[in-house]
Amino acid sequence: MKRFLLVFLLMAGYSYSSAQTETEKPAENNSQRTSQFSGRAADHFMIQLGYNGWAGSPDSLRTGGLNRTFNMYFMFDFPFKSDRRFSAAIGAGLGTDNMFFKKTSVDLRKYPLNFVHDSVSSYKKYKLATGYLEVPLELRFTSNPEKFNKSLKVALGIKVGTMIDAHTKAKFSRDREGYGGYTQKVKDKRNFNTTRLAGTIRVGYGAFSLFGTYQLNDFIRDGAGPNVKPYSIGLTVSGL
Image (cartoon, rainbow, N blue to C red; front, side, top):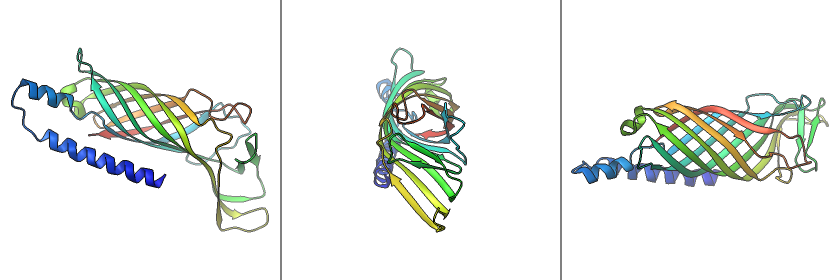
């Protein structure tokens, strides 16, 4: 996943430098102005940081800590010729979620998924982390398309993803045998639906917007665990 992040950032940097070169060219006629307008800054690069939770989580499932989500996408924006305030966007990127637990361990290697209340072991931190390669699609509205980064923005959409990672990470203060001071990591995707379909919304002004997502399909495979639906809310920083 770290290699993917590096490649993605390099691609974004190259696209940014190309966009800067294009916007520095002066407009000489109407056709050139139209071309530059279609290549305007339009949230081509988005970074999202927020809180994630599980809707429908049973009371017996003890989550805790600062559950968080981090997403980043590179998008292509296509303005509508009939009304430049509206556009459609499609892109690709990475979505990650981290869910933390209290006095609970999660055995990914068992079917069904085993959430075990553990009052013996002591954890500094215990989390379930998932990562997806995603394709987001948005229908966008901007109140002033000629000044995109000084405008009210609204976007509705969906994103489709494929799971590339699922693992638990436990930092032990003391395990059942009395040992501590070590970290245990277990990777296994067998109990999860590896395809994610989620609805999305963004509302904001300029480079900043609030976002929300809600997973529409099952997160855990049918019969492999509780029927929870991940959701997230947070801040988007966008540009280019």
